[in-house]
Image (cartoon, rainbow, N blue to C red; front, top):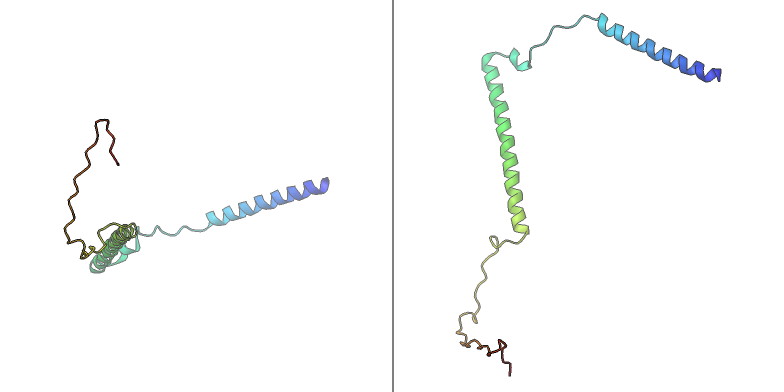
Length: 117
């Protein structure tokens, strides 16, 4: 019993001492000066303009790629689900040009049923 309590107390003490040493090491060092907001601010005007134009071009290119990917996915979806837009027109056969006999529709009888006799 005494051994387990001693080990737990020793671990807690070591942990607290390590935290104190780490905090002391962090606060004892001199803080470096605050850097500018972005490394691009260090550049001269002409180089900064070129860098910002290149960044804008990359952003526009990214949006264009997303748009084209969406458009391609839409076309593939329509193709795979069988819309008639991509199917060729069926060519008429020789029988499609022949006249079909005109068959008059059957007249229903008085009780609403067709006569199949």
